[in-house]
Length: 199
Image (tube, rainbow, N blue to C red; front, side, top):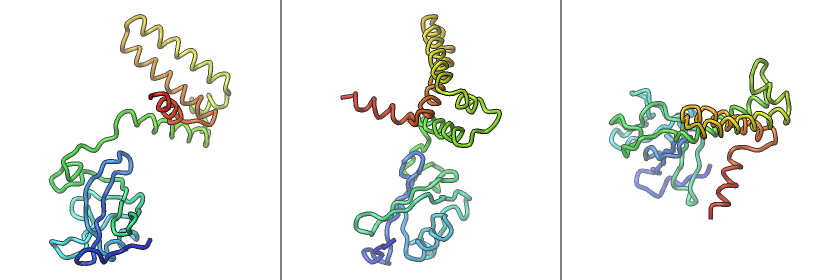
């Protein structure tokens, strides 16, 4: 990657650190060429500390490392965006981010994780897995399960049994994702369709 370290005093460039899963900006640090090279080599974010005048791997004292997922330069090649999987809180004050924000995956994002899990089941087809058995039984069985779970969801809604409603609705969504995966689609395709309709 071509980078321009010469724009700022001290041959430094800013590095924006972003959580790869949540998209939350975690912190901002500075890198010189040596810090950048060490980050690439170790896959752990390493900065140049302007106060200590030395390289500093984030987490070297706390154990709260920043594991690199990807790095890209901006259009002027003088700023880095580094996506990471953080280990523990990022800020030295003990907060998730240096802006005091909570960094957590929204519950709705679990659907993407579930989709990934189901896609992996489809690829590997491990024996003894209920999901595998659905793929083996084919589209008729999957569609039947979606229908059954939809009816059970309606029954619980009409009975005003909220706990069972959520339970059956969860079964419905799970079986729907399995059916989508079988047909080569993902839950994001439904989100995209709904987004198009929402004008």
